[in-house]
Image (cartoon, rainbow, N blue to C red; front, side):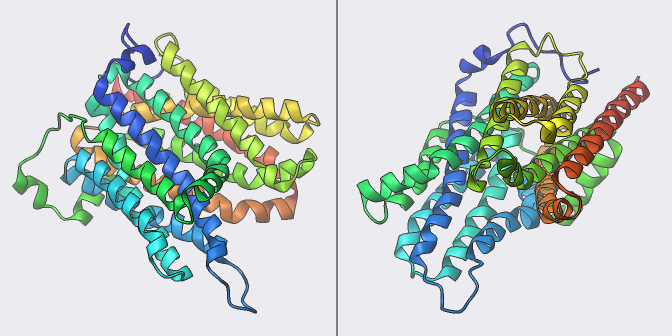
Length: 418
């Protein structure tokens, strides 16, 4: 059922630990991901240093979130196109260096909110070039049969950085300000970016470089159209990308719904992160299962199992009155998400030719970031109009339908290939 290379006998995380280049990439991306999350916490904390004129509505937080997310929508595909034109290592190392230096510049610039907004936009824009370079680097550093384990490890640490970054961001920044002075917060975040760059610098990539005239005779728009054409022709990759996009849609909607769920279980609104953290722990478990026992699960319809697990949790969430059980359900939802995300990312990497990696992953990031934005705009309105239970049950039905459709579509594609 699962159309990827069979895992080798040496699969699992143990084999990856002996791959020096991969481990450097993994540690570097972990620090970079952590810096991204703490940077967002930093911008919110810095608002107290930027006075607001009297009589003006305070929309600075939403403005910062917009400045942080808008580059992903505008430049997601552009980052992927660049990745296919130039070597991966300079993009990743250079992105971390630029983001680190921009963060360190914050205390040196005038205390005007527009400047903080522009710096946030610039740092987020640079991130759009780091992400596809990182994703295309994984197949260059590990064997095809180890991609499942590699993606499982990356997914685990990505969710770990999300949980840890938002959980320890505020205490870490408070300690930095107390111990290192007024500029200590910027020093810590900028230092994380620069440390990530230093760790990835020794990585040795074996890249296939195309002739210069071949790289430059096509413009960016032509290459973008080529990526769309490739996805239309390769229904297996397109199907995997649609499943990834659906997964991120569900998580974006849950980010909004978790605030109301917290009130349902007698928690404070600001404690909604408990549910997201539990789902993140579940994704770590799911990724660990796939990374270690992927050879035994190779022929199972893993994404279908994942969608059905998520649909089950969404359907019974608001019929549950125990907080402990609700957190357990959140963990189960995260395991299901891991069963979707890790295999589908592996499939995309294995089925996409190296010369298309950057464009395809850039387009994937573009689609996912749009998918993250849309539910944030409509979920709250739907909840107000129909109620929390109706929205969750409706999401459960939709996720079930998408999972079954994706499973049947994958089977048809594989039969056509035979």
